[in-house]
Amino acid sequence: MKVMNAIRAAIEKAEGFLSLGMGVEAWETLEDLPIESKNHPEVLALRVAVLVHEKSWQKTVFLADGVLAAFPALAGVWLDMGRAKAQLGDLDAAKEALRRAFALDEELRLEAVKDDRLAAVW
Image 1 (cartoon, rainbow, N blue to C red):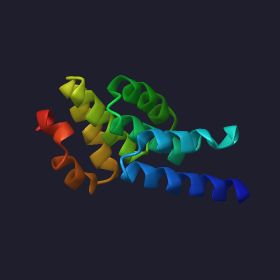
Image 2 (cartoon, one colour; image 1 turned 45 degrees about the vertical axis):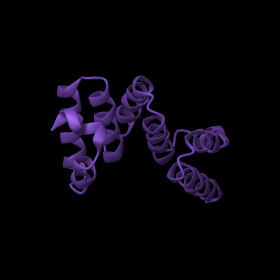
Image 3 (spheres, rainbow, N blue to C red; image 1 turned 90 degrees about the horizontal axis):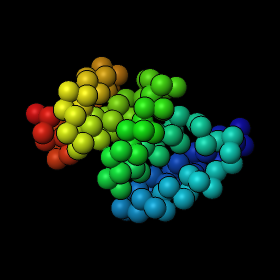
């Protein structure tokens, strides 16, 4: 229970930093977690989101591949994979990632349609 509280607190703090455009601080917050917490799916998903925010497209794909291999039901990570693939010009892979994201969470369509990083996909 104590570990889950620490994870939840770190995620909320990192999300706060990210919402303020402070990607480095968000990443550092997640880095400060104990080693056993760093592979929690929510922590990993947030790391992928930070990389998207920082426009680190190759790193996003690399991390998202590993995260999705372990946790394929993370719709937000599929969306982030789609963003990264679109930015790298791999539109077929971007479309496939978006299909996977929408199959898991239909509401992500609204977010995706407004996302300039996905403009090439439509």
